Image 1 (cartoon, rainbow, N blue to C red):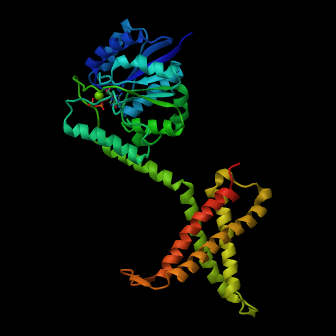
Image 2 (image 1 turned 180 degrees about the vertical axis):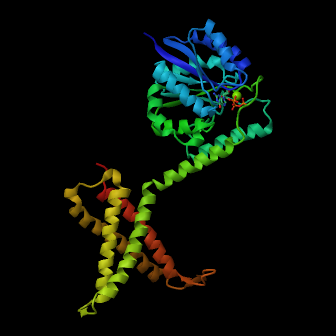
Image 3 (image 1 turned 180 degrees about the horizontal axis):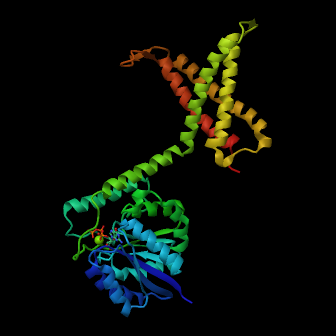
Length: 395
Ligand SMILES: Nc1nc2c(ncn2[C@@H]2O[C@H](COP(=O)(O)OP(=O)(O)OP(=O)(O)O)[C@@H](O)[C@H]2O)c(=O)[nH]1
Ligand SMILES: [Mg+2]
């Protein structure tokens, strides 16, 4: 039996368009070899009764399905419902995303399916690669929004390998849907932001994505449903995503743990200074002992926090903890040695002299402070390198 591919068309007030586009699509389906092709219209109970037009068409086209949403769910909402229906109820292996307003070229569908046959997990129709394009008759404003919008998306995602993030002409396999559907929960994504959000989730799951150029044609019938809040929603979504990336990144956690370690060190130093009795044993005084103990406590805290948080994915075996902790002490002294060397070289070759006064605080910053800051930063690089290389190695 042939595998099924379903073209999902979300509709809201597309009564006229749907009657034109359905026959055009079935005409193209004839040219797709090896696939059982069908259509699923997801209509949000359009006021113009688009669903009635679909019911009429169903008399002629057996493989035309209709899903009626009782409420307007937004573009993403309609697609998620449609994909659930197509993959899980209609048993499709591939789903295509298609607009009702003839902006997408039905003649491209055989090409999309061929790319799937040749190994693509997802096909992205692209207006921004050679052979693709946006309508000439679009006003400068709309052209600008589209082109710049896509550039901003590429910049914010720091992903320039895909050129069209916001288009809605795509094809994807069931395994792609299954891998990312549980990640699509943000409410911003339920509108038009769905397109960029869904594609980003697919990309990050390392699926094979292929872009195929197509010329976007301006709709001639009906009205655009693109909400005014689209730009704002998308930007908000992208910023939230990248903020989340940042706070879940290893470097960020490493820096937080280091900051916490410094606070612990300073606090415990003060505690030891107030509870330990005064004494002097050769070079060992109360202050030196308190310093040593507070450093050791900070090192232990860094070790435990990094193990359970920063490197949670590489948590050490209980049996290895003690040995690794000793190693951790060694690498930590590495950063102290680096700081001593930087300060030594700085004083020797540049010298200690005032540089400038920090505004507001009025503190005089001299080169000594600059050396210390430099040493700390190089020390941080060393620590991060050493943790990855020696302590929490990839197994
Ligand atoms: N079911 C459903 N379909 C929607 C919704 N919003 C938009 N659509 C459909 O999604 C497709 C794309 O919408 P369009 O308004 O054409 O958006 P666009 O192509 O970005 O904008 P235009 O270039 O102005 O047409 C069309 O088939 C719409 O009918 C919605 O909330 N629910
Ligand atoms: Mg459109």
